[in-house]
Length: 291
Length: 319
Image (tube, rainbow over all chains, first blue to last red; front, side):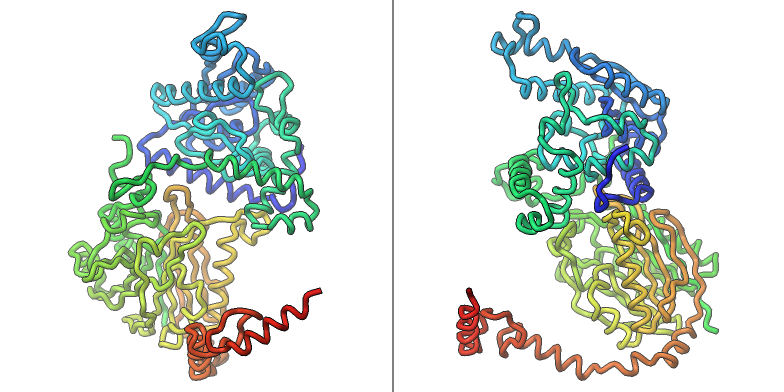
């Protein structure tokens, strides 16, 4: 189904156990009992939906499918298959009017003005991710559920995410799993094989895949990140292990330049106690749950 | 036969909720007593939860706190180990574990080693304890208390055992991590702890009791897996990982004598040798004596001559 690097293989039973308790703890401590997941048809969000259903029951999960008019119909079909398998609530929100209303369409300018008609794929992709985020947070209110993050460790480390877009969530159960490990747990928990097997894609334009865009496979990238970051190998040590120096250095730069995406924005320190600096409280404590 | 039923309270404390956790402790104490337990062990910071950060000062209690006193008063005819944030008279905060029995606080151990690395940040919020002492107990054997990281320093179990402990009790809030499939029980943390406890039980020829919490604080999941290890190093009981529960284990304290007669490791310890070598190391680290193990070229204020020749040697070896 996929090639799992030996060093990345995890005990999936323990992973599902830890993640299940994590999901239950997060929603209980926040005073919620439901969740919202944006389902793209890809393996990350499919796995999250399966994990949430396993942890708290499919009846407490709302999956929201948010296609844009150019999104692949196959992705839509895969997302619908996940909903069918789980038997959870679902809803389709077409984000085309939101995105087109901003950038314009067919020569008619949108809120962004005439210049928006020529917006780059990057700008369009970012807006799509943020429109999906806005939709999920609205459904968080109407459905009464916490938004569950679906970003994996690989894309987070290289910065292949949109700030306040797909990375926005109340909590993330798979953010410490590399893509290969996402696939491993997905196979274990019963995510449809076609979803695990297909080439990962941000689906921003027809035929786009992560791996052609990035120029390396997740198999190699996961191994590289695992040894470089989790196992603290130096560049020279990586090269001695057989990694290509230029690739290691390129990934190093991607990790460094995306550091800001993985952290809460800094606040200028002025007063005696400043959130995140010297005012340090757990997110969940007595009184913090929604009343 | 010196039978003792040990109850391991593998609980999931509620973060920052002292009242709720105290109520749970009272319930489990009563349950353990009804089950015939002579000793009930609660995990590290069982009264407060672990990931407190600035909440530590808000849930800290003095040893004469009436809420603690009510729990202590409930220990007639039974021993309990309970853990909380202790505030001293001079307002230092400690991670404390107390042996309470027969309505009295018998001994308080303040966590000596505060991990402040990786996912840990304890030294920021707490003061380290400065005492490692075994305490006598109504159980008829000495008890040595340690909190989590204390057991990642090999001197802890050794000092406690030499100080008279036959029952080493470690209470923990150990976050589970490293899920590599190659780990013995699917969790690197569990594999490491299991190795440590068996080794310590065998080397100190003592019972080792490990009570680790479960549940989730923020990002971290605590893995449970509480255990009782015999003085031979054999595991008598291993609680399931991640499951909450009160688990009973029957032990024969006379096993300590049998093991120590057969394997007189403690008798053969050489504390005078150890203390001599420690003194030397302390002096060297303080710069009061030449550093006998320094790397070539390392600064050594009392050994300028040696350093100079070492530097020259290093240069000479370059190609």
